Length: 326
Image 1 (tube, rainbow, N blue to C red):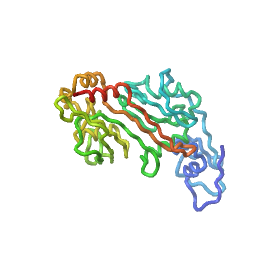
Image 2: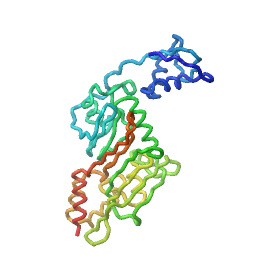
Image 3: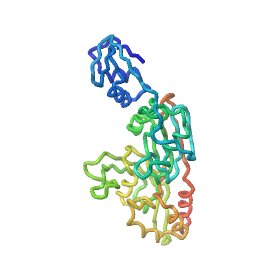
Image 4: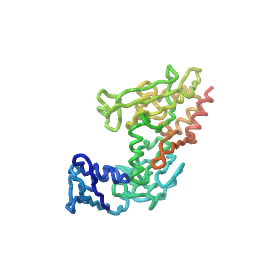
């Protein structure tokens, strides 16, 4: 395809000219094409994204056909909440890894999406794969959106980076936690970084990345002694750091039930639950966290879309079991 630079002040950068004319391709994709020698100015290949083009210059860009997906499609059942030509929203079960990685090369959500979407996936990054713009931990259930083309990926990524500060994007979670906070709602504003000693964990650390979680008590539960033992808390994210809710709630003394990474010392609390609660918690085998709310602006139409997901069976059982303590 060709782009002709029209009259403008100064000499604009090559990457910015292309971004202005080819909104369907992400900036990272355009940069990769330039570096790969796929862009020519006046018939000469230019590999510098900062190259300044002149008025009337003709830019030729060769966009290769997307190659086959590196991860292979796999026939894995998906709970599809919404789907159109631009995006797909999945209600992810606990136990499903989002993206292939060390120890999880197959059997992931990406493998399932490649098989489900087939040819409707465009070449994000030059490879036919779904555009994962946010993730849920393997053992966190709930709503997750993936882009099906470059333009949607770019729009959704910007919305998640903004986290609703200037738009309508919202992410809501339900968390069963140990104890009951001493007020009905609050905000945790504490930076998060890698744990200094356990590299698989995150921690609140000075100098870490800015992280803000808003929380509100939905319901509280008493133990067999009649004292508060646990609560159901709704959280909304203002930032999106790894393990953010798990780290922040543990930081204020209310780790997630079932979270053996950030709340193992709370295991003895289970003795204060009623028999049904103890059985439900023992059977859970994961942190009690569910992404129940997702709202965003459709990348093409601009319509505000919102989805809600009920608690999965195992968390609904935990909730009813906690109510039955007395």
